[in-house]
Amino acid sequence: MQKPFRPKAAISTFPNSERHFRLLFYTAVALLWGASVLNGTIKALLVAVWNGRLEDGTLLRRDYTGFPPLDYPLAVLVAFFFSGTNGQNEAYSIFLFDLYINLQLGYLWLYVEAARPGQKPRWIQSPIYFALLWQACGGAVVFPLYFGLHIRWASQERPAQVVDLHKARALPLAFILGAAAPMIVLMAPTWLGPEARSPASQQMIVALFQPSPVLFSLLLTLFTRTSEYVGRDGRNIRPDGPRDNRVVRRWVQGSYLAATAVSVIGRLYVLIRVFTAENSDSVNLLRMYVPHPFSGPVGTTEVLAGGPWLFLQWDSIIISLASSFWALVLLEKDGVVRESIAIVAVVLAAGSVVLGPGATATMALYLRESQLPERIKCT
Image 1: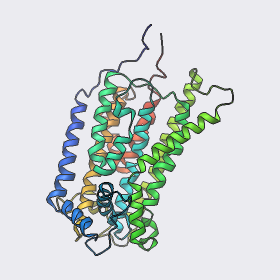
Image 2: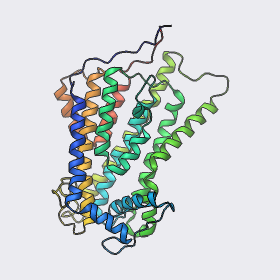
Image 3: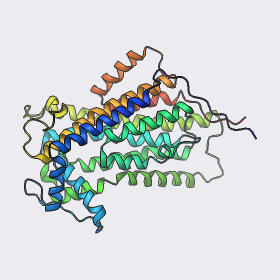
Image 4: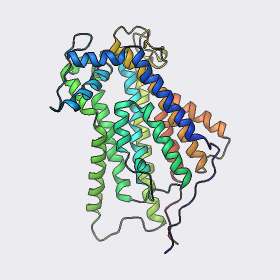
């Protein structure tokens, strides 16, 4: 019995790309976690949870599940994100909303790659582990790890287009309800104002947001099973030829387009808020996005505001670098790039600054999808 034919990946212009992602990982650990230790953020988080109070005296909830080994780290995450999500600090909230716009697109990237046919490493096949890790450790730490593993796999065996029509149909709805909607609920005080929620309510929402990767996975499974059930009418809606392959590809690319649209709309909102802010000394791009080493943005007096903000500034920068480089490597490797690699790199960099790294990388994946082999063929 002959083995299935699997197209081999082409020789890449970036033979050391996996090493570059590893370097980004080490850099992220040093800048995010190293700085948080040095500037007292980690200590302040642990003390706040131990005392049950934040620096400004706000009561901090410590009991969410009744299981202390789970409640304690959950309370630490709540303390970390509370000041950026409660709407009290306009600049911080706008910045964090922009970061989440890009971060949530990662769900679509990882789960589309997991849906591709053929043998895949365990970590590529089950992306929920990476999604849970980026909630706890930061996307800047987790994305370079994933991208490095993905490039290693894609270099050994060229990925094919998604062939599971049911899963392709489930992707856009799962993204909207499992990734975009939880983020919008979390960040609602950014536009509703800090009075919209009590501190206790916002802390509960922050806690509920942390396991949102589980929600995304459950919704994707539910919508996939629903599509399979609806399709039980005597018709085989699994790909069975070029026409069906095109249908699946349109669903995947449609998911990319929908996610890009959501991200661009969010980015426009952020830019409008920044450029129309009354307090331009506080709400400006330089202060919001450019890290001020070790202490956080100028003007922040509380450790649990400045420390997490600095952490997330480095997080944003490294996510942008990693996702843009990943997109560049994939575009070159899969034959999408027709022009100079340097020109494409400049376009990706400009897109990351203007539209955001998430939207730019997602559009690159949209273009790549049609260049992948349609399916794994048996001979």
